[in-house]
Amino acid sequence: MLPARGHDEVAGRMSFISIVIPNYNGGRTIGKCLGSIFAVKDEGIEVIVVDDCSDDGSRDIIRTYPCRLIALDERSGAAAARNAGAAASRGEALFFIDADCLVKENTLPVLRNSLDGYPAGTVIGGTYTPMPADAGFFSRFQSVFINYSETKHGAHPDYIASHAMAVPVHTFRRAGGFPERFLPIIEDVEFSHRLRRNGVRLVMVPDLQVRHQFDFTLLKSLRNAVRKTRYWIEYSLENKDLLSDSGTASIEMKVNGFAWLLSVLTVLLYLASGKMRILFVAPLLTAVSLGVSGRLLAAFHRSGGFVFALAAGAYYSVVYPAAVWIGALQGAWQHAVKRLRGA
Image 1 (cartoon, one colour):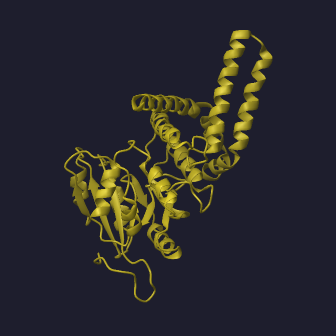
Image 2 (image 1 turned 135 degrees about the vertical axis):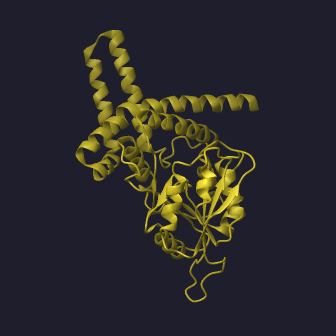
Image 3 (image 1 turned 180 degrees about the vertical axis):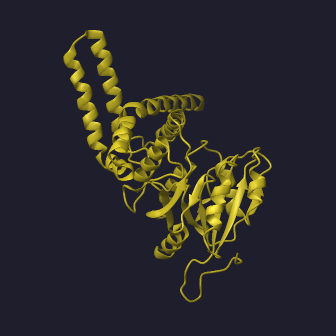
């Protein structure tokens, strides 16, 4: 690895990048993650892994790679781990990824071109590949869903996700890093919104991709939906942007959720009244939802063909909203409790 240095004197290019990876019990994936990075021949990087008190042997795996290991003394969370890695970095730019992400052969070249192609201080975002590192149905569903949601607005995202976020180091430090006294997740959303309020430009580069290892089953997929929706709702209610079209908290998902809820109420009303004509409302609501989500369904089709798109569309419109509503109710309840305690 080259030592830290300034911009290339000839081309003025961003020459040294610090890749920062938080790890907590990532023994199943951290070796694959680091292996994918060091398989790319790029001498202008350093890799910093911040271990957040893992007890699964992760540190032994990390030590087999030529990276810097920072071992935290107490469990602190992903935001604190990223901040610790950034504080120890020597690069001109920080590239944050997760311990369950694999870089592609072109990830770092695309990253360099992106950093050099935008004005100084710009925060560059990437996303997941449509095809995840594991080939299961629920993992592919999630990877396509996130890829579509994070890139549908082109170069103008609402936030940049920390699974593929590049920040000039001076921008990161001036902003104060990720919030450590915050929710357990979505600290990257708060960080992005704070940067944008301070006049920092956020740019999405759809070709900047990492491959994620989900290993999702049906139960894991639904649990993930519950957890993420809960904290999204808490944050959105506090931030007063509940109806905004923001990444995976998209307009499509919100329309889908309300259509599902109204369909369930329609069925319950039929059961209570016995009037068959009431049931005709449910398929109309589903049709409206799928119409709004047409581009997402097209993304499912591009990734896995007609059969996958049919199954993914059915899961998205019939099963997934139930988990979203459970998470939404939990988040609304937690927000109300916090407000009452604050009062």
